[in-house]
Image (cartoon, rainbow, N blue to C red):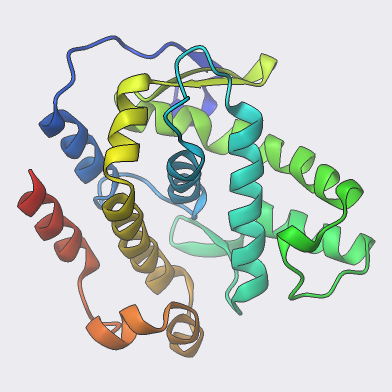
Length: 229
């Protein structure tokens, strides 16, 4: 079964070392990993953001993960002029999550620039519940496969996700550099999905000014990881 279609999975128990973790990250951020939208990058960023020393394989973090994912995607939509696209067979479509956000804003008559943090409890709960269907359908199973079935255990029917403690420690120890690498991979995707360079420069600011839109961020990612390994 294709990874994106998996409904549950148990994390493999292997003997991890630093090189294995960085190899997984390098593969995930490379061109060979299918990324049709920003969902995968956002889910990994969410895992890193909510991670703490108290996380163990006994802690179900599904709800915390969904909350963080919902927040990041909502604020990206509100803070930029870009469409969160899904690219399929070379054609760019508006992503399902973008449609959900637009629907919520229209139903509740919200300002287009409204922040996730400003939503009232009813609106926020409604939005998060709709977001669950997105990450269950297109994201959690796919990332499980991308990371060689090691990163977490999950059961979508029961709203359960348990982050592998070894990955949790790796994410905590390398949080800053991992978020920077995800940022560069996001830019590479946006360069394909967004047709108006002005919108990219406006949102990404200093990074784009420093390196330029023509910069190969894949090469930058590889160089940074090789210097760490």
